Image (cartoon, rainbow over all chains, first blue to last red; front, side, top):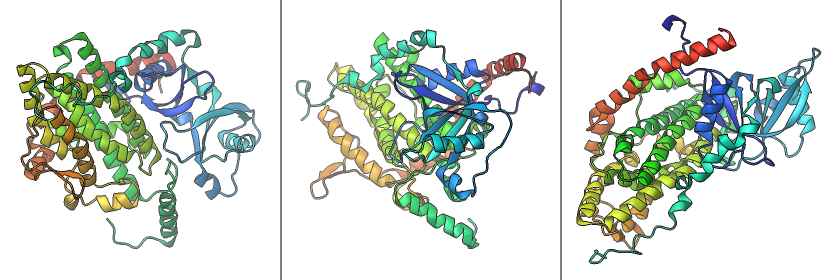
Length: 184
Length: 317
């Protein structure tokens, strides 16, 4: 019914994490809009894995991500954390360099904490080096992964589409095969 | 803009912000930034995203008319990339607090700008090759510059887009070079495409520096690291000699290599035409918007079905 349609016709936003090889971390590549986790994973594949290499995707609702920059961490003194309550598992991501890059924060590990602010404090202790410029913590329960046993069906087709690679076109030098009588 | 002097707090923050940019640091979502920096970025990134989306239309027309399966696969992949690039860029704008719905509303209502070049028609198959070589070539030049930009999410989107668009550029160049040494009809078709796309490709790099009032501020904040005219010169230096080597004639009698500067100097650009297209009076402005609106309206039932499915499986909000 039109009256019940949410104001945001695009659906909620999901952060996308892509893993390029099994020995590499999942990395934040951007976000997609989707109605549910399954839809978000399909959108993530279309938008972020059109080319090799990807072996796994994670999606998480954008509002489940707690993000803190170095500036925010130091501007708020002291950094207060949630205390007590039961501990939850958080996935920890960080960015450590100002170099030009295709991806944002990388997955570094997990911490258990009663809330996201405590999770950031725990992450600063657990992963001190190199110093992070941005931290993301995401409750593990909110992260949905592409199915591991279907990884080939999800990602192998991109490998065969070599015509999407600029290397498939070689070095294109206009002068090499000039037609007879062409102006020089 | 307000003439009010900034509060001492803001002045300190502004100095710290500009010092960060001078050190080559990236500004990330959550960091303090001047409101004008945020506003300029939302404007630029929004226009850029719309350009990717509208940019699917001129070439999409030719998908069903491609002369071979290989060319068709390539063209589908290219148009699909443009859709993806629009998504990367809308994401970057959203990190600044813009909403996707507002951005799309502005495009569909005709309030938002997009690249002037997509308001020209694609009249022959050779146009697909010429767009790849020239329009994507110009876009890559601009985007390599923007990949240096101080705002992290925009810079990252540009790095990814440039990597993918190198394929667009090369497939176009390969197509043009093939037809330029093909049959007489193929050569004529290719020359005609060049005649129509050369000037719009120069224009798409934006107004002359003297008419680009935002540039000094954008340069100070590391958003633009080169001016429109500098990027345009890079584009001409790269493409003019190669097009001539391919046996094609550039539609600019004044174009000549200037040994003292080492640059190819082009004749005057028809800025009246440029501003007319920007203001909505190009050959296909109305058609492009109408096609975009129709696609949006035709997709409404899909969005409604997804929302209904989600409400049923996840519980209504």
